[in-house]
Figure (spheres, one colour):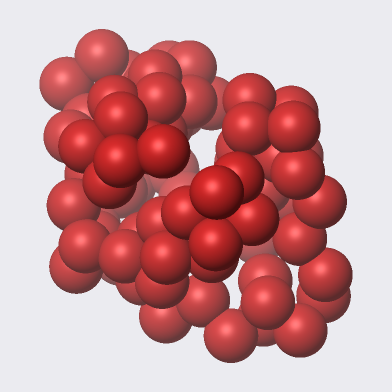
Length: 80
C-alpha cells in the first residue's frame, strides 16, 4: 500500500473519530495539533485505525508513536 493511500484512509479515520472534516494529517501531526485528541480519544483512534486497515498494533508500538508519520510507517510495514 502506498503512503498516499494510507494517508487518504487515515484522514477519513481522523475526521470520523474527531468529528471534524477539516483535519488533514501529515507525518508531523501529533496530539498537540488536534484539539480533542486526549487519552480517551487516542484509544478510540487506535481502535478505528486498526479496524480500517485490518491490523492490530501492539502496546509497544502504540506507546512509541511520536507522530502520525510513525503510525503510517508501521501501517505500511503491516499491510505490505
